[in-house]
Image (cartoon, rainbow over all chains, first blue to last red; front, side):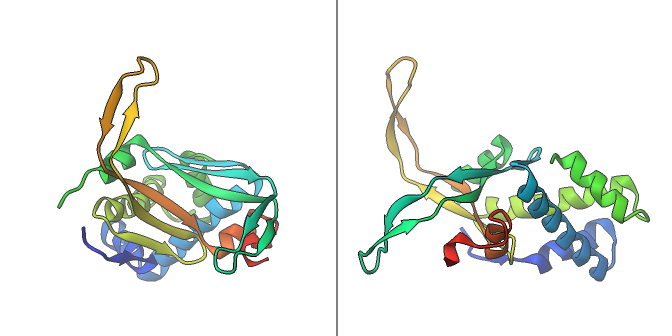
Length: 99
Length: 99
């Protein structure tokens, strides 16, 4: 397993390479895609990207927690959390150890 | 929101791009993320979140229908952790982890 971190730059470069847009426009459209996914999760509970996976917003009730460092009890507020459910295709691509 | 709806929204803003180019752009973005994860790499998209690969240990499972025990091999699963901005967005602008 290699240990590289892929960021916006690499993805944007792939758009330049494969679709032939300028670097400027590739970066811009990538940001827009991420923004539209985020915006959609503000209003609806699910973004479904076929063959990739689904982003799902789940509601968590308030609960008693503990600061793991100090052991002090603290209330954890109710919140909405984004989870990602990978597609079967993505799961099987990641699953096996290729070393 | 579905993949097709995401592409339709992009089409409104990038009217000079062809529909199949927009489809290709979304596919390239998602494929870059998937390929990185399949190689065991991490993907960091600041503000949006980070995709990584988590190791699951081998365990003894049970077929819920027959009750038979089965050995489940160690495997890797895709994992997504939302970024600060996305956590705030789905909570009305206030990141609950910063409270």
